Structure formats: structure tokens, C-alpha cells
Length: 480
Image 1 (cartoon, helix red, strand yellow):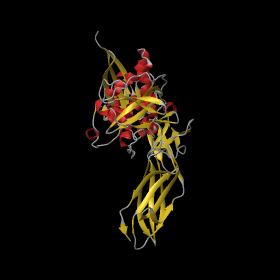
Image 2 (cartoon, one colour; image 1 turned 30 degrees about the horizontal axis):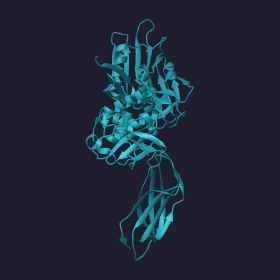
Image 3 (cartoon, one colour; image 1 turned 180 degrees about the horizontal axis):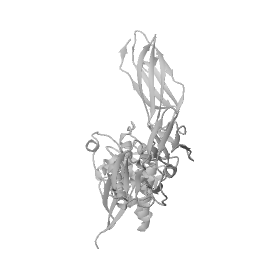
Image 4 (cartoon, one colour; image 1 turned 90 degrees about the vertical axis):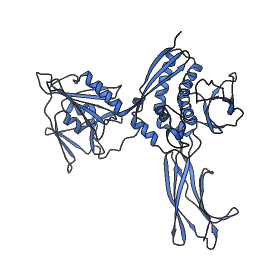
């Protein structure tokens, strides 16, 4: 019997649209809108984002005399205005959430046309409502827009439109916009792998901005890579990915064990790519989205991806850090054969993520009998610090910055500074006042030390949270 090919479409880019923050609004509600001489009010106030006035989608189009429709799959807004009472002549604009381009169309007449315009600010979801840029839409519908800074007033002169129930747009043009959206704003990735007696083929559309966001995130200075799993920035994305795995499993009546094996086979099919090849650094752990876009990574990257998926599915999962290698541990019953580690009274079976065909509990020969550090998938702080020193009278002033690059808050944190006298003694020492440090935040402060004269010393700086040493640094030894 030949292999069957199952096609599954993963619109991952769509699922990510609400993950990332947008530039802050300014003067929200202060802007006044005047259309054809009449001041217009809206159920929700205008938002000003980076100098662009944004209005709620439906009210914006309707106020300008246009019909509007929304495509939920592509997050696409299409609005059109009928310009002649007895002829099919329409001005139409099509935009999409988070897409930096819009299609402006003249349809129905003898001079049909389409042109693409760049947007300073694309449509956005704000507090559950779709907001669209006022000027671009007004001009696309034949309006003339001016702005009076002194009164913060937008003036729009626009011809009336004629009644229409739905916006008018050619199917071919909406398809052209979708293609434009994909090529301009999405990274298309296709995956093929074998599971059971079938070949599976999945396609993912991943928003370029979201990929760039994760790629540009600073890597936490820790070898506990569980922080890449417990980072909440991609929780919605992982949940959407899990949903697609479960839908495929339900459709084909997979058991719970088969579902896990199905996910494992997908991750194992990704290419092994060392960090120095994929990103140019020897050690550069990736977030799950990066690994999917790159269609592979080293053992840390694929282990982080697999652990993220299985953890979201509700399975007991840990990361296993072996000498120069990383794998995943999956919680299982005692009757499962293979290699496992005991952790908190349960067995966590070894799962190899590099290379195909490895079964749960099957471990490569070179890692047999090796010790593994178990990394539970529990949010925790990762504390780093930096400091500068300068003279302040007869004292030394230390300006210290403490950062929490982890996924949980650090409580009762203090900065300790001292002049080292050797043999466990100090010439002078001081503590900062205690402070709490939320995940992905930082603290800055100054500490002062009295100079030791005619002494050989160095500066010690330590960061302590709840009595636990989190980070420390030392200067070179100097003679004062």
C-alpha cells in the first residue's frame, strides 16, 4: 500500500497577530474630526499612533459613505463607495491588520485600476476593535484631507456615496492582495515528514515582523534554556500550533501516545543546523518561532521547540542537559521501556530531537550512562548586572544596573558592593535598599564606598534575591 499524503495548512502568522505590542498612542480622544463641515463623533475615540489618526473600522467607512466588510481568515478590511447612482463605478480600498501596504482600486468603469500604497501605520487591533488609518481611507474614497495642528482638527471634504449593501471588489483583486500580503509580510515554510504509513505535508505562513521580533530579542545570559519554553511571549502561538496537531490527531483517531509520537516525528524531521552556521554564533538558543522559520537548529533549539509543544499539550516535560547535548524528558508510566531519569517521584523518558526514527526512551550510544541536569519548565528569574565607577569626593560611586532577563519576578533583591581586603575580609561594604524586579525589567541605582588608602583591593558587586546569590562580578586588583 502506497503512502498517503496529508495536507494541513498552519496559518501561524495569523495566530500571532495579537501577540506583539504596537507603538503607543498619543492624544487619544483629543482629535476632532470634521467631515463636509460637520463635526463627527464616534462610539470610541480616535487613536493617534506615531502621528497617524486611527478610527474604528466600521464607523470610519460608514461615515465616509462607504460599505465595509471584514475577512476574518486574512484579517482583511475591504471598503468601497459607489460614486454614480446609475452605473457600477466604485472606489475601493483593501487593507489588512499589521500589513504595511493597501490596495486602492477604481472598479466598474472603463478605466479600472489598482495601485499599492504604503502605510505609515497599518490597521491594528486596539482593545478588541479594528482601527484603520483615516487619511489613507479618506483619500482612497475620493476625499481631500487637511489637518489643523492648533485645534487638533482633521478636516475632510468628500463627495457622498450611493447606497450599497456590500463593498464592491473583484475576486481577482482580493486574491492579488492576499498574494501581496503573503509575499510582503509572511514567511512561507513547508514541512514534509513521515509518521506511521503516511507522509505529512504542512504549510506555515509566519508573520515577518513577529519572526524579526523574536530574532532580535536579547538572549538571556543563562544555560538554563527552560526560559525559552516558559517565556509567555509566544504562548498564543504555541497554543495555536498545538490546536492544529490535535485536530489532525482527532481526524485520524490517534491515541494519546500516538499524538506524542506524531509531534516528536515532526520535530525530529527538522534539519540539524549548528548555531555557527545558522546565526554565526557558537551558542545561540532559539525561540520556537525561529526554529520553525529556519526549519531546524541544533539540539537545544529542537528540544526547546518540542518541550514547548508538549508542555502546552499538558504533558509532564523537562529539558535534559547532558554534556555537550540537550534532549527532552517526557513523563511516563513505569512500564515504558527505555532510558529515563527520576524527577520528583516520576520517570521522565529520554526523547532525542535530532534525527528521525528515535523512539521515546531510546538514547544514542554516546549519551548512555551520562549524567543529566534536569531543567524543569518552571518560570524563574535570570539576573544580570553591569556597573561603572567614578570618584565622588573621598568616596567611590558605583552606578549599577540590574536586569531580570528571566520569566518570573525576583523578590527582595539587593545589590551588595565592597572593597575586597582578601582572605574573606573587606575594607568597606554597602547594600542597596531591597527591591522587586519583574521579568523583563531592570533597576538602576547608585552605591557609595569609602576609599581604602595605601591598600591593594578590588571592587566586589553581588546581586542577591531572597538571600540567594544571583550574579556577581569583580574588578581587577589595584593599589590605592
